Amino acid sequence: MKPPTTTGIIARILTATPEQLQAVSDALDGEPLAIKKDLRLNTPAQAARRLNMHRVALWRKAKAGIIPPVYVGPTRQMMIPEAALEAYAAGVGGKK
Image (cartoon, rainbow, N blue to C red):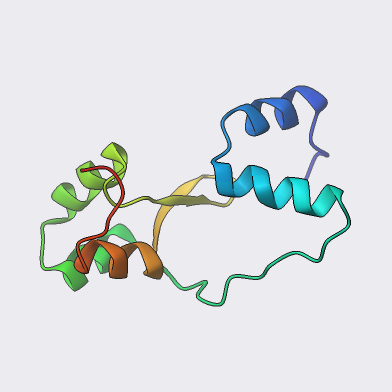
């Protein structure tokens, strides 16, 4: 794996969420990194089954930011965090 380039790092910072920026700021200040307790990820098919919706509907909601996905690995496979599923099911998902 190649080390990140300065341009790549700056691009990621410019597109980071406020929570990600706070984590970077905390790390630069020497504070210990907060580890999320729930790191379980679901494939789109698993998430769709859990929410009782078609996988294409889930994919569209993920792309729209209603159910925020994460992208994993060098192929950037879309995965849905358990917390995002729970938030959507509880009615407090991302964008409306």
